Length: 152
Image: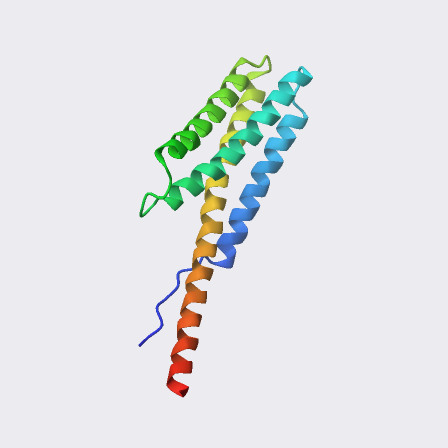
């Protein structure tokens, strides 16, 4: 019996994903740190970005967990999707209503959307690695069990 191939991301891809995510966090942080205007606007946007970041991870996990079989309740599904929608909507609304230069708004918008897309990519990469590690551990356990049976 041949060993099945376990699909893994390359080290270069993993590095690219982490660099991209780090760059998105840096750009968002820089944009928010230099945000002109009132402290309340800055605080709102920081909270909005953090809310969007966490709900993007929640949504990615929810979708992946329910990919082959529904394991979560419909109420949890509603909570996850609603939280993501509310986070994105409120952050977008806060950005739109802020009284800052349009160029600055564009920078904040692009860096925010970059953060969200890299969050989904990072979540997928981390989950793929976890699943590959589990598959490899299962294969090793089966191989050890076969060897033990053969020696008896």
